[in-house]
Length: 277
Image (cartoon, rainbow, N blue to C red):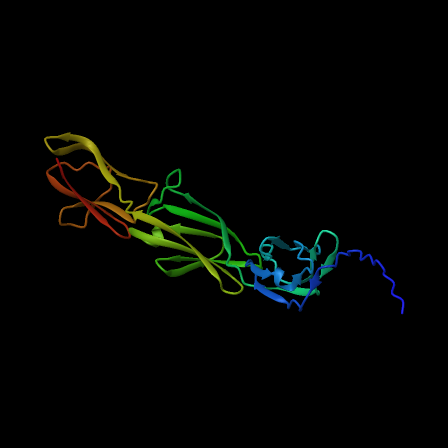
């Protein structure tokens, strides 16, 4: 028999990365991220280092760590829907793609966002929270938004509902002297709510005085009754002591008389005793 030797040249061919298994659909909640270890689905027969990528996709931020193969997947803010995607592994010469699967984002209701609150003191300039209970008032106005739809504004005073709407007027005459908690509650259609609280201090507006000529503790001459006209008093009268006869503030009555100035409003009475000569 005859033998013959042959030299066979084997040319090296780089094999494509190998994809194994199947990537299942991935679900996450709105505004939350999830992770995927993509390296468990690819390998290279020549043990080449692999770089990973994905097809173009909107509404998601996708970050890949090529050293660990961990993929961070986060939907854009307030996005909730389903989008298809596939990944690939690249050994520098060839790419191998995974199966196509879906990223499902479950909608989660967002609480409303109060974007602006203004309050105007109708008594004093500025933003002070002190008012009087005559003409004193504070006007509150608010703006809020919700990505899912409309919002509703409700106002409470000391936890008691008072008004629905964007603008609420707290009038001192409606409440009287004291310290009050004003609460704004904004609700959306899913009844998620957000609160904003304010403090209002109501002081009594009774402000009366007598103007005249004083001599030895006695008033002489014409007596004028002054009441602060900005914050009206329910009634203010000048009486003879122990009588119901009132002095009108302009007449002159000679003799010794004890007079009592009486002013009243919703929450307070003030008595000022004077002697008339």
